[in-house]
Amino acid sequence: MTLKEKMKKGPVFGMACFTGTTCIVENIALSGLDFIYLDLEHTNYMLDEAFEKQIMAAKLHDISVLVRMADDNEVAIRKVLEWGADGVVIPHCKTKQMAQNAVDGAKFFPMGRRGGETNVRAAGFGYHDFDWNAYIKEQNENTMVIPMDEDFEFSDNIDEILSVPGIDAVNFGPIDYQVSLGQKVGYTMGDDCKEAFKLLVGKCREKGIGVLGPAIPPTEENVQKAIDDGYNMLILGNDMWHFQKSVKDLMKGTVEPLRSKNVK
Image 1 (cartoon, rainbow, N blue to C red):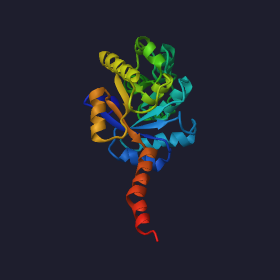
Image 2: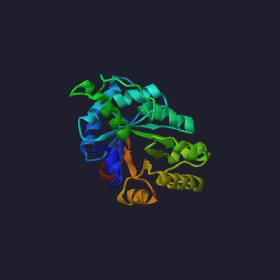
Image 3: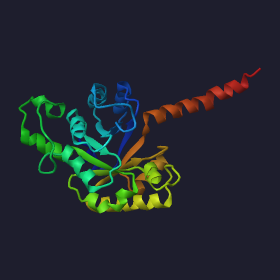
Image 4: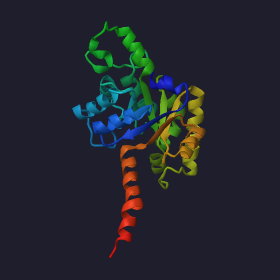
């Protein structure tokens, strides 16, 4: 079942991966989550074999792969999709043209202008009675294009951006949104950020577009509130966050009490 099909039944849940270690990718994939969010913006990974292996590790198991790109470069977008990713997230999308660039790179005509090739993973390398028309239809229907609303310019241009055919969801980024306004940073939104999120949710609901974003810390209460607020695609932290939390809990709950108890 594709991620878009799962979204028709209710909210979907995923986790970001910043370490890029294939065994971590596979562990997230085996967890039962719906998607894994790989990152090219805030990591040292490039469009090379190491990053392709991250996608391959996820595709070994039944989990969808979203890739946050570094920008709206159409060739880079096409490459990660041909490697097997299910969707692309475009950071700092501020204009209609940026959104159109993303769709052009991700979707085939008539939705976009993506170039085609059979000798890629997404096309099954041309095996099993490959059919170009079926492949184009499947990719246009199931590949997700997700611009990020993380700057005040997105709100200023929201109607133009969301008018681009082929946008499947929008990723709201509360931290960078508040940075763009020169406000204090945190997952707890300031009033202007709340208004921007409320505007986004309303516009997306009108168009049947998904809303992706973080729920931190990912407690049941916080995740439910995020769903009630309008998210239907939830990022439940990332691998580094969960590792750091485990280490902090270990220090606070085990090491520090034992140190205090056994001080001579």
